[in-house]
Image: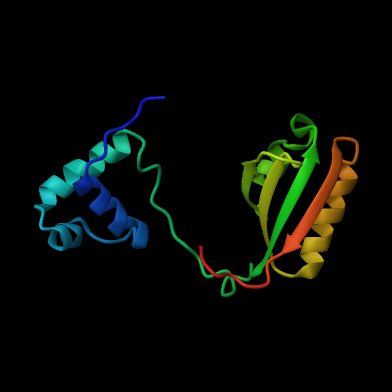
Length: 145
C-alpha cells in the first residue's frame, strides 16, 4: 500500500469536507484563503490518490425510520456466513473484523423491534452451523458519531 503525502492545506480541505461535503470549492477557498482553482486541483489529487473515496450524505435515522441501532458481535466461520446476501442487506450498515473473543462487529439499523427480531432470528437460523455465538447490543443513546 502506497503512503500518500497529505500536507496541512490538504488537511484543512478535508476537515471542511468532513463537516459538510456539500461545501463549494469557492467557499472552501474563502475559508482557507486559497484560490478555487487550487482547491479544485487538490481535491482532484486527493480523489485520484484514493484519500477521498466518495462524497456522501449523513441521514437523520429517526426521520428516515431507521432509528433502532443494534451492534452484533459474531464468532464463527466467517467464510460461511459472511456472504453476498449479508453484505447487501440494507439493515447491515457496517461490518468490521475485530480482535479478541469475537471475529466480527456488525452495525445494524432497523425500523422497529419487529424488523430487528426477524433479522436476528433469520440470521441465526440460516447460519447456525457456521456461528458459534453472537451477542446483540441495542443502542440506547448516540453520544457521538
